[in-house]
Amino acid sequence: MAKVGFLGLGSMGQAMATRLVDAGHEVVVWNRSEAPRVQMEQAGATAVDHPAKALAVDVSVSMLANDQAADAVLSEEHLPDHRIVHANMASVSPDMGQSLAERFSSHGHGYVASPVLGRPHVAAAGGLNILAGGQAADIEALQPFYDVMGARTWPMGEDPRTANLVKIAVNYNIIHAIQALAESVALTTAAGVKPQDFVEVLTNTLFGGVVYSGYGNLVAEREYLPQAFSLELGLKDLGLAESAANAAGITLPTSSALRAVFDEALEQPDLADKDWSALAEITLSQLGESRENS
Image (cartoon, rainbow, N blue to C red; front, top):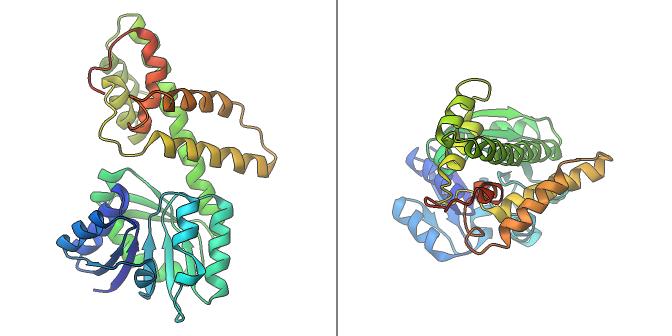
């Protein structure tokens, strides 16, 4: 087994780091807050109190919240003198991905943009799909750890921006799916169809797959806890799609409508701390029903 650093122990990061520990790897973990470090130490990891200590391991992984966190934690002053290979598995903007790749390269390090597809329960089961953008030799060095955390690694070429852009585009599709489910469930519920029955028809005929089945059940039950991915992070990813489109000179006609729904949801105190599937509640609330399960 090998030694690997892991930075960022939110719900996704902790599930992924636990997979590595359970596989027998020596995992050196860092997180800004102490409680997750303690939990991982109890699970068999080695906790450190500074990100540079986790980055000093020859191979490391990070799962940080956003561009700002990635920029601060993966800063130049935290990088070691000896060569390392790092996988940034968070959803960051293509520009930040490029900036980090250049930062690591300028210090002689390897950097692979490695955003993942899957929610925390998928991560816990090792079922993530990993989008890998970087040098082939660096991806090869990371592959033993990818194999523990994911079901498949999807090579996205040498440009890290590509992997980040593909992840943004996938999440943009998920946002549409959540809103489409909300609208179609509202239409059929108003006609007297049970939401669960409609979702069963939808997912067993033309719209199978993990997004429609998983989010379809959440929307049908109006059950938005526990939070696996926040509304705030969903809005962040919508903004990343809008920024990428602007950079490419592309118009996204539906993005403004989706942004308005996000803004309304985040203004409501009883929704703001729920899973991003609670976006559906803005449409479903027109039915005048209570959020019994949310």
